[in-house]
Length: 494
Image 1 (cartoon, rainbow, N blue to C red):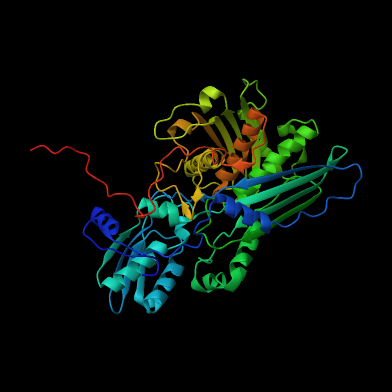
Image 2 (image 1 turned 180 degrees about the horizontal axis):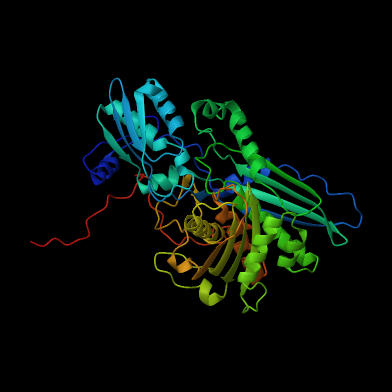
């Protein structure tokens, strides 16, 4: 089939053994021979110039350039689906976020009409945007039709990590201009590997519109989403935020808050540097320049509850950040430990590094329907933000991502999870729910980055901060494409 070779067997382990026994001549992938550095160069070449700063002879500028490496979508379960395709009808079971588009695309692939295809949406593990695409369901239907049998398709974890959907590599350049204690301009240029929106808005017409040639359709979606979601809620004079997307060779997707984590982190790091240049406290500076009362309220909440400004040992620090998107507002205060005794911990089968020891998060989404659910959603986002800042990324080497499973993709683990986490759901007199979405991610990522910069005295230039460290795992092979089948570790006795 067009995405590889499909094997049908009675068990998952038999499928793996069969795949490893096959001798296949594979064509080169779209990024054959390329590594992280090659993609970085392409992004740098695509960057557009920042607008000219305000013409003021007394003005001073602060400018930083940040790099965000590829990150896995890290869905809790792999791509999977059950399909039963007959000559005149098809039935598919899968976890899906865009089931109508899936039904219509599957019908198109099978040469059927949509009313001949029944799609059942089943519960899945956390997908964090992964299930907007229906690769597994489409593949299962194609395989079932070719084999003439019902199939249960399940991707191997290595497939999901290496060729699944991920967060694109991006750069974000920020320049602020100030004079006489006032901010005259805030300019940000975000350049990214393309984020794929070809799932459309839920049906095939918008999906086809997003798939217009030369990236025209997808770019239109990207720029619209960027404009709708990215906001600088500070009174910073002339504000400019631009998006440039390039390179559509990678499988990407709307992973946890899409553009906001990277854009907000770059912006908030520069806000800290701006406050320092003006000799102001980071929290007080933010509070004085915010234009939105709801954002100011969540900021005040975390500063109060987290005891902002309390004495901290050398090598540790607090960080604070805000995020406003759609109809919600969030703020986060973290404490981080960057002392050698913490950074150099010996972690078995894992990675240590700096540890976030405390998180205080406040969220205002208007009318709250499920407070405990909202709190849990923020806790998940908090762990994502910590991972994005400190530990989790994909390493591209010679055309392949090295990470291939949870044992070498270092999402926030137990030894890096903060012992103290507080989530405050703000009271609201609004009668309208604002939606929580992924609001916990951006403010946490930014707060961790700011705390790290204050604890170490160095503003990080790339994320996660451990990406260029020596690998803490032995990469699994790419030929054959998946590791050996699982074995039963129990000793049988008779």
